[in-house]
Image (cartoon, rainbow, N blue to C red):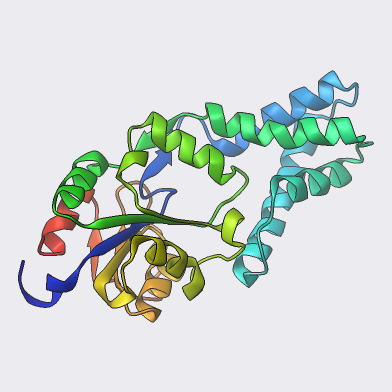
Length: 245
């Protein structure tokens, strides 16, 4: 271990499109729409496919407004209320609960793909005594489901700290989003690195906090030139050497 990277004691990872991605043959939104539609059908309030697509698109725009403004978690309950109102659905308490649960069922079932080199990367870092954490901006699949899916992929066991926005009520790039995980890991920002796919949230947030920041392109390339990372990584097996570990 040499040079500027000698003090790296912890690494935090983004979740979506960094640790795992979605099988391109099965988009999450398509699965959410199908599950939501099935519940409405069972309740005797079916809606045409184009109306459901429009409602879900409008809902995602509402989510992105909340995300970009960092005004707190936009929950499956918020999404259910928005989509139902958009569709003109009469919502009883029982129906609302089933619609909310449809998002959890989608998260349980959608096919996930581990990122290139993720197992080998985590094995190497963990074996070398590096503390590992996750900093995740949660969408409409709750953190309890996200943890369970990592367990299914034999990835959960590697992590020492967590920061899921539906538990912290804060999104990246805010410093608090990173600090929750770093505090649990017992690692100071200047001794840590973060890797994620999003330049505006992952890279910008980590660099502002004094962390090293790496942009991952192995599943999705979201570089926009707004913030330069310390390096771009396409295969997570390369991360340990970049950190000089």
